[in-house]
Amino acid sequence: MAFKVTVVGVGLVGETIVSCLKERHFPCEWPPRIAATRARSETMGNEVFGVEETSADVFRNADLVLFAGKEGARGASATWRETALQEGAFCIDNGRDFRLSPDVPLVVPEVNADALNAESRFIASPNCSTIQLVAALAPVHRAARIRRIIVAGYQSTSGWGLRGPEELRAQTPPALKSLDDIPYDPEVFPRPIAFNCIPQIEPFMDDDYTREELKLVYETRKILGDGDIQVSATCVRVPVFVGHGQAVWFETERPVSPDEVRGLMSDAAGVRVPDGPDLPYPTSLDVNRFPDDVLVGRIRRDISRENGIACWIVADNLRKGAALNVVQIAESLIQKGILKA
Ligand SMILES: NC(=O)c1ccc[n+]([C@@H]2O[C@H](COP(=O)([O-])OP(=O)(O)OC[C@H]3O[C@@H](n4cnc5c(N)ncnc54)[C@H](OP(=O)(O)O)[C@@H]3O)[C@@H](O)[C@H]2O)c1
Image 1 (cartoon, rainbow, N blue to C red):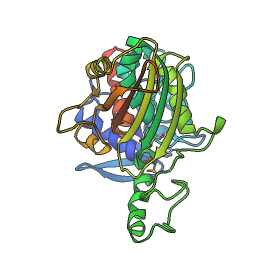
Image 2 (cartoon, protein in one colour; image 1 turned 90 degrees about the vertical axis):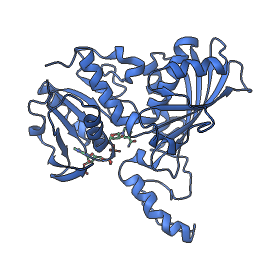
Image 3 (tube, protein in one colour; image 1 turned 180 degrees about the vertical axis):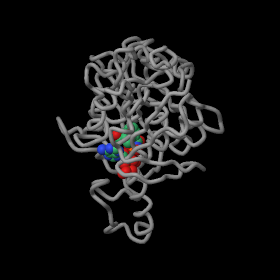
Image 4 (cartoon, rainbow, N blue to C red; image 1 turned 120 degrees about the vertical axis):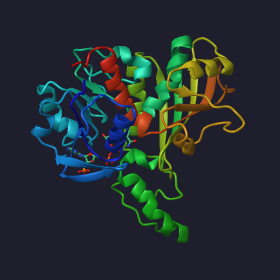
């Protein structure tokens, strides 16, 4: 059975969704329908795809709609979700608009595939930084109940979308000549990103946290099904193209040793704990070698807290942090017999 799939948005995430569908042999008609703000053709890999302007027509008879357009009131899923649902399609959304709605499952399949059911036809994929955090910590939470998480994110420019890496590329030659007055577009990053670290991702919200930081608080609680977990985050944009890093400190109810944590994480689906001499710990560049894994390293006792563990987590924000997770949600819908012919 080949499902009729529509992908809305063909930026960094939309393009990666198309390549994940293909490389995982997702059972869909090929090519999928692809829509964005305007019609054109786009070359992805060695294939040329027709891109349609998003209209009600692109959702007609769709079985599955994968939203990878921008967010907000005029964003893709806010504008087209009802149309897609009325066509009877299952929808999976990359954006933040509906993630915290009580009737919308927020899913990382390795962690909470049980949240998927036939009644919820609109499913949200979490923020990229939340996905890698919960994928690595869920097995420890199940075994020893995590009470508190402190996380410092070192987030790549592709997390912004297409214009993020473009800014880094454009700013690098002038920055190599002089670090004063690097030209930059404040619509993308609030300060120059070349050779810089910017401790602000998205606008400031409550209590002087940014929206990106609060996503880590509320999405983590929802996915782990535990509203009592205390989370405090600082998210920093760094001059990296792809691959978010996170320095994480967490405390458990039951004491766990670094070895037990290493074992729990190594056994978890989708998590890899490299510790050989060739790769003593993962870096952002290592996502090229392990594009589908959440990589964890530097697991050690937190000497400042009782029952505390510190570690370092890295993942490809475009794949496991977005496109791959979305395709895995769709695969789970099929495996559970929810999405069927
Ligand atoms: N980048 C990441 O690491 C990441 C991770 C997790 C989640 N996400 C989420 O994934 C979504 C896509 O992000 P991205 O990084 O791929 O952004 P992007 O590279 O800027 O691409 C955005 C795409 O959405 C299309 N689009 C925008 N508004 C639309 C609308 N109203 N209707 C239809 N199409 C629309 C754009 O069309 P045109 O091409 O015609 O301009 C473009 O193709 C966002 O919600 C983002 O928050 C991103």
